[in-house]
Every structure is written in structure tokens, then in C-alpha cells.
Amino acid sequence: MQSIPLKRTRTQIQVNEFIRSVYNWMAIGLGITGFVAYFISNSETMMRFIFGNQIIFFGLIIGELALVFSISARVQKMQASTATSLFVLYAALNGATLSAIFLIYTRSSITSTFFICAATFVASSIFGMVTKRDLTSMGQFMFMGLIGIVIASVVNLFIRSSGMSLIVSYIGVIVFVGLTAYDTQKLKTMALSQPDGLDGGTIRKGAILGALTLYLDFINLFLMLLRILGSRD
Image (cartoon, rainbow, N blue to C red; front, side, top):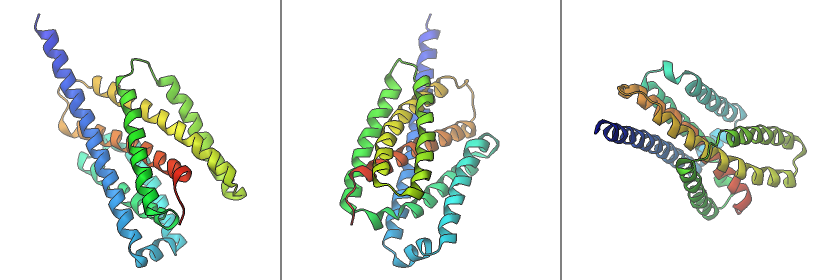
């Protein structure tokens, strides 16, 4: 009679440990990105090196995309240490490219927008964690919205409409708030479905993949909010 409660307790502990690991790695990634972005923004030499040379800048962008696809598609075939190193490298490269925001927006507005983004992200993530509603259909709808945002953003590169940019940003906030809730619920489901006896390396790789997913949600939500709330220099 005692085995079922004990099993439930053990399962809940495993879920909590996995989710905690995901958020810890996400926080580490954000910390690295913030540090690198701030450091580079205070170095005129580095800013000129990255943004004064299109080959370097677009090389960094391509490198970031390659790392995201590599981690997402091949994480189960990697060593846990490799997956962790690639995630840290991605966070650093993203910090290098995101240092451009310090050229566009005031530091006070970047700081205030970050805290607004953090509060919004936490609220969305908590909702995804505690809701009993299946968010799969919402997640699919938000993914379609994400595709629309990408297409609209590419089109706007040519027409350069400030109005379209603002509309895309507002829609982007809604999309990434929804994706944050959906991805959080998906991580919780993944944690609950993990079999007993998994080795630490496998659990670490799952945590890194989850951290990358939430990291991307946070960064994109932050950028969308910054376009709406940020004060330009």
C-alpha cells in the first residue's frame, strides 16, 4: 500500500530536479549572453571588428544557426559534455551579435525591458507548468504564427516599414508568450515520461535541449518587447 505514494514522491522529485536543471542551464546561457553582449558593447575595437565587417557578422549568424540545428537534431548522439559546450558557445556567439542593441537602444530601456520580459516569461512558464489544459493545439498554432513572423520579417527587410515592424513585434510577443507556456508544459511531460534509472549524461542532454528551447523563447520575447518599449539613442 505504501509503494504507490513512494513511487509518486520519487517521480515528483525526478521531475523537480530535471526542471530545475533546465532552468539553471537556461539562466547560465542568459548570463553568458548578457555578459558577452555588455563586454563587447564597451569595446569599440570589438564592435568595429564584428559590425564593421559583414563577413564576420554573417559568419557569426551562420555559426549560431548551425549550433542550434546541431544541438536540436543530434543532442542524443553527443556526449553530455559536448552538448553543454555547444550550448555555452551558442550563448556566447549570440551575446556577440546581440551587443548591437546597445548601439540602438538606451541602456536604461534595455534594463527595464529585460525585467519586464523576465516577469512575463516567468508568468507564462508557471502557467504552462500548472495548467491542466493540453496546450499542444495552442503550440501548433503559435508555431504557425512564428513562421508568419519570419516571413513578414524577411519581407520587411526590403520594404522597411516601421508600421509592419511594430505589428510583427506585437504579434511576436503573443507568439513567444504562448510558446513559452507550451514548451514548459512539454518539458514537464518529458520529465514525467522519463524511465527510472537513466544515467546522468542522458538527463543532462535532455536538460540542455530544454534549456536551449526556453532560452530561445526568452531571447525572442525580449527582442520583440524591446522593439515596442525600447527608447532609441
